[in-house]
Length: 141
Image (cartoon, rainbow, N blue to C red; front, side, top):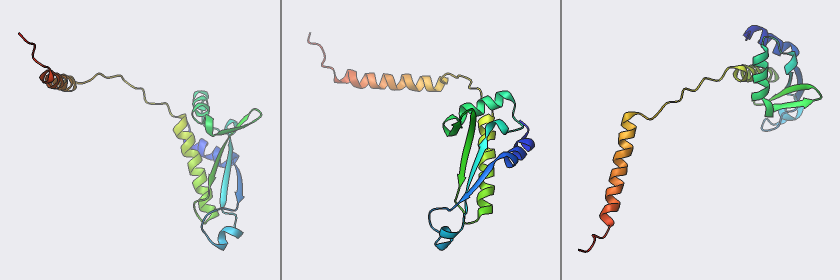
């Protein structure tokens, strides 16, 4: 994955929409378009290999919206009162999502329980068995 070309392609190909934000902010909320909605078409991303693009589609599946053949990632940011800060946050979130989902998952190596864990388990079983054996009525002779 080429991070620099990925970052550049996100900024170049993303469709940016500004709208009014909700929440606190007084009159500022009612008159200034500070909310940023970023629409990123996955086909237009540069810097990803075919395997990375496939992993990206698989891991971001529920977050993608489809219109015909194109798959689009939609990210909204409206936390701050500044349009510029919200735009930078949206770009950063898009880059982080793409980088995290395109990364290969760490291979799991199966392990068994340790010797101490096995001994502890057997000790607790013996203790529990002793408690239950103590409840039994001794057989009559």
